[in-house]
Length: 539
Image (cartoon, rainbow, N blue to C red; front, side, top):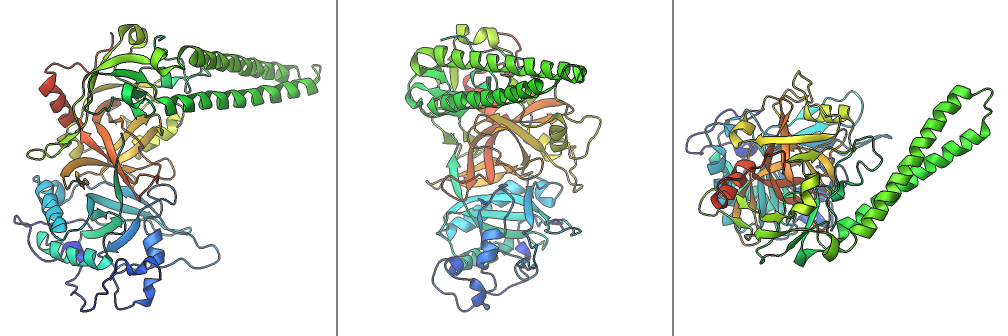
């Protein structure tokens, strides 16, 4: 059950459902005893997860096997995590949901409380990466098993190989004085915070055009890949993210994205050629006397595939002839304002990561349509409606015929706190989306309450957390920077700007992504440019 009460001084027994667990007298002075052996052998240290639990507890939250490792969970004494048995045993699958309609959501209590939790953790010299609010929805293995939604979880991230389960246990005991409700749990994980960082542009085409999806790397929509002159082998997404460098050219598509775009075109050509060859063989094998109508239909299909191949070849020639040289062909403007990434340490604690570039009219004007998102072909219309509106209603999300969605405004944190949408667990939810070149269109879940992240310099920032989601299994929400939006009553509004995420380390999949709230981004922009116009529809 969710938390039911919080004292005004944030004190009292019961945080994390620990039932007044006493500290053990014996603590081996090593990090993570179960790292190289099964801690089931250490029965008197019950809070240390076994190797199996440590490596499989968060199965599903990244959609692959790159989920973070469990370090500690406070309900170890009341909620066993047993290894599946039997011939067809399989692991339970978890997904992460947001936190709504709890005492933590009321009276602006969460931000001061969360900062107190951060202070307690840092006082123990723990290598903190984040404090996130979460609820975990478990899909049990096997038919007929009941699904379950966890209580509110204070989800703490620490750098890999730096913190023991004993320390996590002790720090959790120190946090007991903050809350008095026993319905809130605490879980610790290992995680790494990472920053995501010629011819006129091509116009949009009908979604029935063979080049509809593969041409988007050269169109002026959200998710277009941009690079500055001094970082041309790197790729950023959507609203340009740049460092505090002097004015430089802004170029559409860095080297990596351009190369990938050419591969996407050639892959699509191969698919269409294969289809055309199959149709040609079928037509050659049939007699016109007995199959006249079917032959007529298949000939129409062959003509369509042949045209698609020719259109794709023309796009490939255009890209390699008119866009291949990044310095000569892909300049679309120059930077006008590029401040360094900062955190408002003395005020809101939100991250400021934005810049402005002047777009070249000759490059952009003819294809400009305004603040528009390209939905693409990754999901069907039915899948998008189900993901945005788990329980359909009269105002369910609708995809336009041209596959584009216009952004019409900004959402505030207050609006996000009381969403109208309900998911299939009968809980409030805010489903958000972004369109980026690395992961295309993706859908995620807003955490419901803000998160707290800690960078390598010990600076604590406040962020909007986005958890992975997907039509069947969780898919990574983002790998690089992009603008996040959601849909209310069929209209799209900006939620925030992505700038960082967390994974288990290395080049693994993100399990949570962070963004600056849209209202704070707008506030920062207006401080420098008092009258910005984000929603014009014509050049």
